[in-house]
Image 1 (cartoon, rainbow, N blue to C red):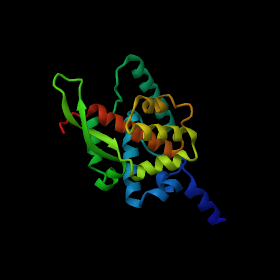
Image 2 (spheres, one colour):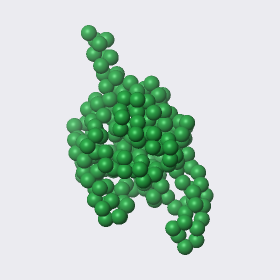
Image 3 (cartoon, helix red, strand yellow):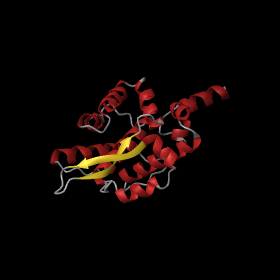
Image 4 (cartoon, rainbow, N blue to C red):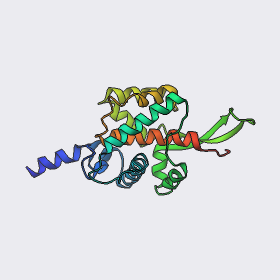
Length: 204
C-alpha cells in the first residue's frame, strides 16, 4: 500500500503537491537533481512576478494568478503595447541564481540584427537550445498532450518565438491546465524568453 501511494505521488505533476517538480515523473526522468532545483527557482521567480499582490507559497491560488496574467497579456495585445510586466533586471538576477549548465539546457545566446532602430546593429539575443533537456521535455510532453505537440512542432519548424508560437500560448488558456506544474514551467519559460528578447539591449 505504501509503495502504491508512493508511485502515485512520484508520477503526479499537480501543482498542489508540495514538492511540485521534484514529484513529477517526466521531470525527474529528464533532469537531474540540481537542474530540477534550478527549474524550481525559475518557476518560483515567474510565479512571484505574476502574483505581485500575493505571497507565493503553499495554499496560494496560483491558478488565479495565471488567469489574471493571461487576461493582462490579451489586453496588451489588443492595445499593441507589448509589456509582460516582469522586471528584466530581476530576471537577470534570477539567471545568476541558476547554474550555467542548467541555463544552457534551456537557452543560449546568439546574434540577431536589430532593424527597427536608427542604426541597425547586431545584438545579443536569446534562443532555445534545440538539443538541450528542455527541448527534450517539450518533445516528451507533446506525446501525451496534443496542444503541447502543436506548440513544440511549430517551435521546431520556426526555430524561434514566431508569431504562431506566441499565439499558441496566448490563446491557450482554455486548454492550459495550470494545476499541472509542467504547464506552469512551459508558460514561465515561454514568457521569460519573450521578456528577454523584448527587453535586452546589448550589442553582440
